[in-house]
Length: 395
Image (tube, rainbow, N blue to C red; front, side, top):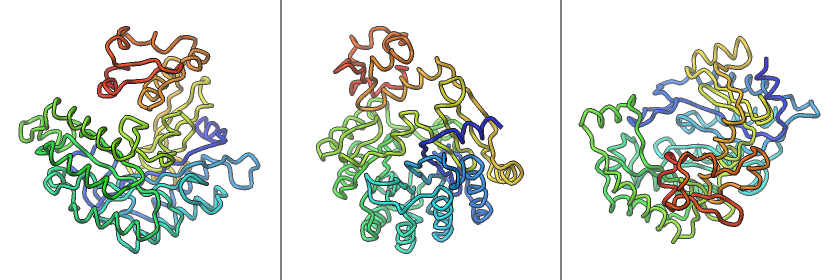
């Protein structure tokens, strides 16, 4: 099978593991996740390890790939029993021949997504013992009214307690997720959340403007007039407040939605933005191998329904339902889109060497530099602060 051949050709990979199970599904969420009172934990985790073995050479193969990062996402990974997660991580380590993971900046970066409502002291200690060295906590807000509007099951106090428990458990690399542009959220509430998050001194903060799919309960409520989002002007002001407060606190914006202290950038996400090879395991997971396809990469994605995914893996060894071989045009558009999201932008000479044209030529609007949305600096094409606000409209 072509997917297996291309996956096994990768030599330096990141691994993403998708655990789609949640105790409750938030009204704004359009990720591949589902509310599951009793997730089929053991069967699902066995399928993940089977898929890993199908897509990567065994440890005995002299050409087995190097693993740079491992990211456990969802869903709510921390919703699963800690011993099950420990078993999964142990299985991955043993099969891939990974030595003991280390602290941030060294060895393999192992990230676990977690929600305050499902984190316990016992679980945090178990994840740490299992090698998790980066924790991404879905705090979302430190305002209970905003959390209620989002349909979150945790409170601001729960979020704070989870952070302090994580520090006590020894985590030295913690990222917080925050959301703005929420119904009933005002500038003061957002500003207070930012100040509260900064006071905790996490190593990394991700901030996202709420975007709603029409298929989600919250999206339908907004469309039907039952909920009102802050105006575009207010959302822009929230973004500007965010950038100012975080930069003043010593965080630098290395990607449109991500801020970090130096040395604590998400290595996993950075590799994805750089179009490095990554293997996605689990229901709905995506994979990308740059060396596949027509020289510009191959991407595939798995069956999203967990039950069907498990059946496919048990029968075939993996669960792909779609495959795309990228053309040069598709690849260079991705490079533009992903490059402009990052603080250092795109190397103009390197882009021209690979794709035969300067990146600015590919934009329909030729006045983006004159309009102050893009800038050329030190041989790189970068989005300005204004350009980052309208990034989706540029490419």
